[in-house]
Amino acid sequence: MELSRRTLLAGSFAAVAAAATGCSSSMDAGAGKKNTTGNLALWCWPGGLGKSVVDDTVAHFPDQHIKYTEIGGDFKQKLLTTINGGTGIPDVTGIKGEDIASLLPQAERFVDLKSVGADSVLGDYLEWKVKQATTLDGKVIGLPIDIGPTALFYREDVFAKAGLPSDPAKVGAQLKTWEDLLAAGLELRKANPKAPIVADATDMFGTIVNQGTERYIDKDNKFIGDQDHIRRAWDLAVKAITTKVEGRTPGGTPDWNAGLDQGTVPTVTGAAWVALDIKAACKTSIGKWRVAPTPGGPANFGGSFLTITKSAADPAAAFEVIKYLLSPDNQAKAFADAQIFPATPAAYDKPQLKAADPFFGGQATIDVFGPAAKNIPIAYEAPLDAAVAAPYTAALKSVQAGSKSSEVAWQQAVSQAKQIGKRQGVQ
Image 1 (tube, rainbow, N blue to C red):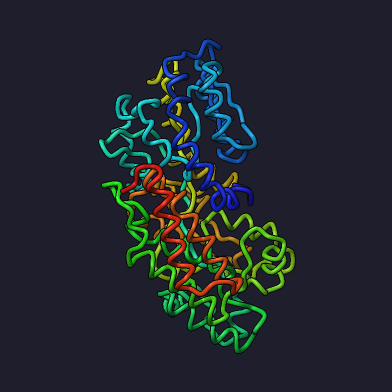
Image 2 (spheres, rainbow, N blue to C red; image 1 turned 30 degrees about the vertical axis):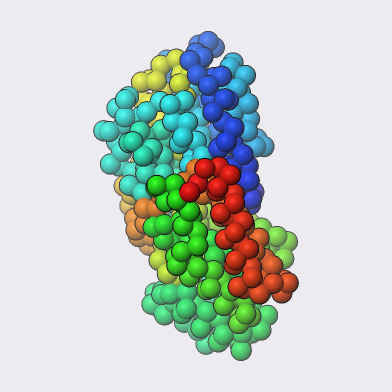
């Protein structure tokens, strides 16, 4: 749940695409290999699971002799390399949300969790999140660790000084759409030219796309990245640029970090886990931040899964471990540990999530994130979706820089996206 995770969400597209074409042989090499250590081997990345939850799970299953390993660096690549090597393959492994779509075509290399009793608990998790780990023919290869519902993080003091609504309920009521946000941005620019209401138009574009039920490739493997739902996101992002209400300040950069505390980055549209990034950057603005619903409706960024590899010595026992580790009670504990936002709605009523947060002026942010999580639209994400999306971000950056017009950049983005898809069999 560190800042690097946010960067990874934006920057892993090319790696995901490469793995989508190359992981078949890697998975084939590992299939059928059994864990011979006598332990149930569990892999995840640093911060991917709550420490107290892992410790409790290890103690709860003494007969399983759970061996938990945190793998730093490029987790997916290290996992695939291990599977390719055929030894030391974990029984249970995490898979990041941005990687799950690229691994669905290799579902036969993982255990279908329905075959070991997952039907009894799948209803406890948000349907749209389970769908992300479900193949088109109904196999479920992962149980959700967490999710990343979005909200509008904003500086209450900056809004109030500019004459904008500052109470979360009023902000939510007035800034219901992206057009509303851009209009408010013009008002904020008049009062405070150094505080653009949109930090970065490329982030805004990605959020709008994620709010829809369609992305770049449909279930029939047809390219739809030139259709109205993508063009609308593009036009809104371009409007933020041309009306000068965005600051060309990508998340995670030094300017972004400094601007959060100084008020020159007065809003962030981001997932629940971005709260950790904002808190880490802010020293003098504690208590001045608030959270309101995302303009245009809820979206999701990030959120991961636990899977069982076909190398697992005892898949049924491995599933009992996963089921316990990812129960509502333990997901609430993981939120308290490291802001790992639960994928089980039953956790939202637990004390760990209901607590008032002093950083956000005493606001209980679950009142915003909870409803958002429940209402995120179900969208099909193709294995090559992320790779096909990359040209749009690059093209928007050229519009930001003033080197290309919106129309020229759009046409180039569509053309490049089509070419990427076509090389991999997208129609």
